Image (cartoon, rainbow, N blue to C red; front, side, top):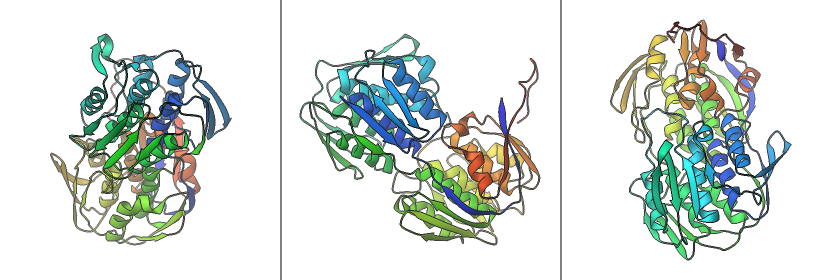
Length: 431
């Protein structure tokens, strides 16, 4: 087993380059199942979510060639299976995108319910299944939590999303892209990775319009070819480094970003007293002195992203005054607060609202990553704490951050990845 060990107190300075977007790549890799040709995809982050998605594609018969660490050539013409077992899907929530991609490819899919982060109880896929049914598929649930979706022919339809759902929007797009006729998704998600997926599919010959708005129109095509494509930069990885610089103080140039994707994050940092300077494809974050209190409410894009809530909450732990953070997307996304309390944070949670009263300092402690973004928050907490912080369950962090130790070390953090032995039977750790 591994953990991160951080000695806090260092200001961050220098430059860091952002990797390809996790939320884009886990949708785009399944989309290669729709292509009758080779897809060459660049700027793929080296993270465990990608590793497991590639394993799933290989298990179905895809041919995958690594050109370099961040570029792959994927040929799915040899895929012969439309079943994905739980042994693979349990590692990755985004494995449910294989349902839409396989339906779009061959009108049939059998995929076990996925795993991944669990910070808000069960994440239902009812909106996904509703969309499939509106396109003409029949859905049955089999033993071992397998979803079986089949259709004689997929036919375009008007689909209204009862709630804004990124996952359901992606899955319906994948299923509809080769359906007969016109599909209209209303109340669609508008996140940057929705636009990235649409651009990728259009590069293969799809006809998708309106991505990035709440109405997406998809006119089905009969054939999609291979293409060359580069994944957009990761909005949340960039935001995580921005929050870390804000919390620790310092001056860091964050490169390979789309500044427009970061506007809601930049706005809150500026409100908290941080200087954010935008360039064409980078942002410079300069922080000095104590942060000022500010209130945050997470919302679907273009609102403040829920995936940045834990990282910003940590930064506000040392801010002057009292900040209120409201979670407007997921239930029970404040589990990580227990870990921060161990370090001396003053946070009171009431349902989907956290009241954060700034304290003088945090103290290093043994903590754990409850999920991917909570894990990123624990890194930031360790960076600003006095003394030594040890973070366990870092498998969650590796799901979405490429070379996180190397990147933070390069800008002045004292962070190491170390191995530690498994506990003997009967020993319970307190972290």
